[in-house]
Structure formats: structure tokens, C-alpha cells
Image (cartoon, rainbow, N blue to C red; front, top):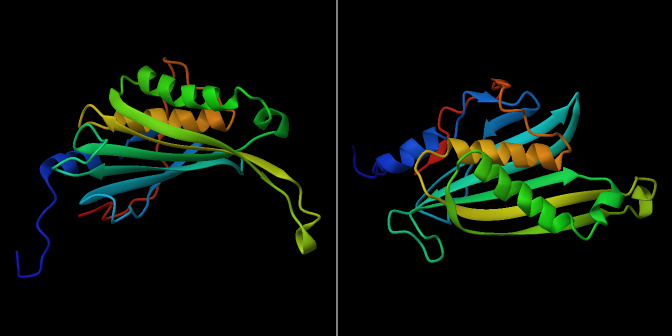
Length: 198
């Protein structure tokens, strides 16, 4: 190591970051490594995803893993996962008063289904209506669901959390979970030679 070089990332962070890169994902999902935020924790890694049906993008999301060897207030551990999902929805669905609790249950039930232990979970579900004006007045009105959540994983291996997040995105896009006896296809995501930040 030369003067000015950053010290290597802790082994626990490197193992957790590697576990965020599954070899297999559902065929509707395209994953990629994306830049992670640099001010939320000393170490971070992030992946982004899009859910497609044919050539139509139905949902997008990102999952950020934060690591602080000293922990942070409210984390209940050294790791914190931050998830974001946005999906187009039919207007009548976004008007349902139960949409918020149902969307939140998609996350918690997906985490449980993948044995992804967690603590200190919190988040919001937002319904957004976009209406065009002026030279965009002819654009159709669109309605979207946005879910933002964070939780602290109970284990270093984050593969179950990534799988749960992928299921959450598919559910938001209106695609049911894969049956337990069906195997996902190999991932189509692009490789990033430096997927995490120190």
C-alpha cells in the first residue's frame, strides 16, 4: 500500500457485497451494479434492477447495502439495507386504501419466504399520479407505486435479502412469485469490475 491509498474494505463487508451478486435471477429481472451513496456509511454497495414483461419495463428498483463497523443509531447492527421500488399501476389499484399495508406485506412476506432474518424495519408506501400540462397535455395520466424501506439483516450473507427484494419488485409489477420447484434462469446483468465502494 502506498501513501494515500485507502485501506482495504473489511472482510465482513467484502463477503456481504459478494453475496449481493446472485448467479441466478428470475427471467423477468435484469440486475446491474450501480454506484452506491458515499455519505451514508463508511462502506457501501448497491445494485439496481428492472422488471420486464416482453419489452415493457414494469418496475425499477435499487438495493443499497451500508456497512459501518461501529454501527449507527437505529441500525441494530453493523449492516443496513435500503430498498427502493417503483412500479406502474392501474389507477383503480392505487385508489385502494389497503394498497399501503398490502405492499408492505409483499416485503415482509418475501423476506420471511427466503429466510432473510432482519430487525429494525421501517419504510413508506407512496402512490403517485402524474398528469401532463402545456405541451404534455396529451400525455396519458400515469399512476405509480413507490416503496422505500430499510432494515438490518441478521446475517452477513445477503442473498436471501436480494431474492426477497427481487420478489417484491415482481409483485409490485403484477408478476407472481416463482413456485418453490421452479429454478430461475442465469442472470443477464452486466458485470462491473468494481461493484462496491470503500
